[in-house]
Length: 418
Image (cartoon, rainbow, N blue to C red; front, top):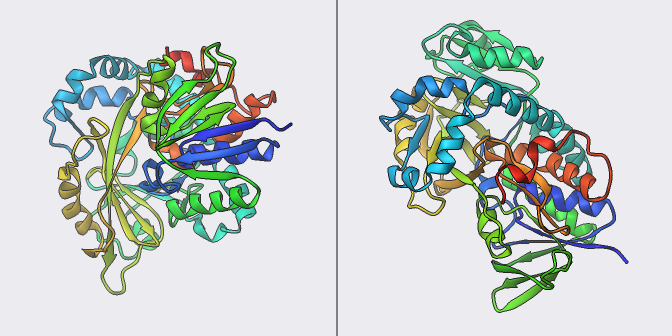
């Protein structure tokens, strides 16, 4: 008889886990309160690349703290009450800014990210949606400094991990993106980076393939999880609406809701939230953008999407469900208009999402400490879209007794789950 797995959370990570478990012959039920990819995985710059392993809490952050404490920067905003209430997370987050811990995280995330594009390509070929992938690279641009000078630490990391990039001058920028205005003095092109034109639709098409192959999707809110047999080896019961769903084996991939899911089972999870916003805009007639650009000085990303040009913001440290604060979006919009002829917003509403983040900026990809049939995959901060499928493969390998493609020790649950 086939083992049955229930995967809670239909974002990029949960979808990746469900697909790879299914490929190994398991029966899989995927459950989420919303349509697939409607929450955290919906809003991002769509970038898939091997270089997104520099954590937010790196040594350079300590030097920026005095300025960031003013709480008026597009790069990072915070809620004082939230910081006070979550002092343990903030303390460990800042402790991870040391060179040694940052290098450990870079190595771990580099190993994870290095297989991300291959896994997405494999799924796109299987689902027939390769048209969503662009391989034009990703531009990181500076307004004031010369190429790479303003972010030499990141350049040093790229060199250390042999990530291909090339410095670009004003003339190079004009050749690559003719419709960018001349506000940038230089930067660099990550030529091996790819991007997708609609992250949510990409992931929903993955789910369509999952369903065609015999998977099941249940759209319902999981109100609580309890053990069917309180021995650590029995199954679970998920309370969903006015009904319940048995779960022989359970994988929690619920992003920022994961800690809530695990609390009834006796687990404490030190999980933080990096909130972010995006809005879509139309372009003036004749203007275009062919790849995502990161304005390193102004603190935003512009990315071409099917819905229009997507403007994304920096990080807001706040409670997951706190009211929206559009100040970062309002701050970067004039700077974005200085760089590209964007006009009025599209009819799409402003999106707010919540990236789940552990203090060391590494996800958990592991078996639960006290339950042999409970597994965890969440906490991917800014790389959830990109690393969802490869995370799914790695966890499915571990579950099925295979040797994972990379060492999963840096992603063990005991770091932050007790």
